[in-house]
Length: 148
Image (cartoon, rainbow, N blue to C red; front, side):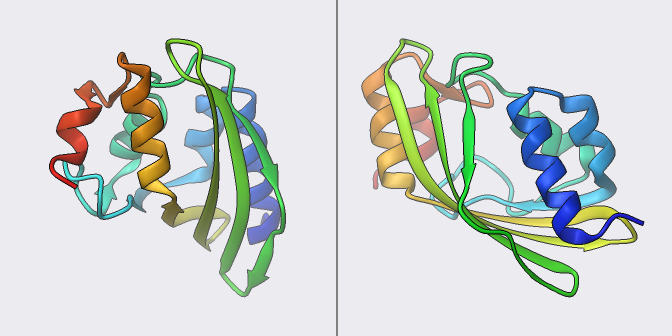
């Protein structure tokens, strides 16, 4: 059985390759994904492999293949793995994007069963609003953030 830190490392490698089939295989059927509270239009948590893959494959705010992940640490404790990291990308309109993230993964029986996503949403939303064409799962960014 794959150890939790190896599983999480595989997840980021697959994301960088844009290999959603591989990512899908890493998730449990009933995986839960906790988006930041400021993302008002998404359920907290997103439940189920299809919903989570929908979030990860939305592809409507970054150019395909432009995401790159720098993992600063993989910090493991039993079934939990915390990952402070940076993601760089190019927005749909060609603007550079670089943001810091911290993910916390919970793994069971060789699968990712739960993910908590933390990032600077003020920066992300401001950058995507500046882009003018970005959407989050088909919803215009300004509708996702509301009046914050």
